[in-house]
Length: 272
Ligand SMILES: [Zn+2]
Image (cartoon, rainbow, N blue to C red):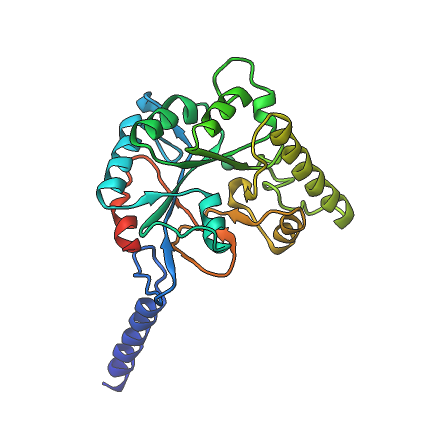
């Protein structure tokens, strides 16, 4: 009998631990008066081809429905600059901010996301890989610098840095992280060079110089973050699927991946 009670208590204790420490994305976010909840959605590609839909690709209708829901629920899409202006006391955030981000500089940012941004007058952030537009050969895979200039000029699209050429994932190196066989000095030189080359490219191509670094594949560590800060960046975007509570700094901002067949309503519920 004693053993049964022991088992009951241990099960109850385990259950309590699970409930208390459950960090799933539906946990409510409780803030103090001055804190601001900021949900950030992460998109990659938009395509009309249903065969492409999946974790990193959605349909144009899905993106349009997201926008409609966001606006209907009273949220206002903002950019990294808006966040920085809020932090520096230059301009307040809207009452219910949200950020829509697109990674990799896919050409669908121009063909699908941008026209919908114009239609609904909403802002989004696009993180581009510096080496990709250079390789643009009219194949309409990635954005060209010209398209980026047009989008930026609209005041609705803000470009940020997704590395110059570290958007690779291999056994040798995962994104912008240090490889296991690399010397410290060589790694520091690699990152500094990659960041300065990409920042220079934005300027040379008539674009605003980014202030945010979007980690390739979300891979980050403290060494990388230190180098990013030293290069003058004031924020970073990651891939940890949680709500942001805007506080002291803007590093390691978290994002919810918006995959195909994903209901963003539950993210909006969390933010309210
Ligand atoms: Zn990426």
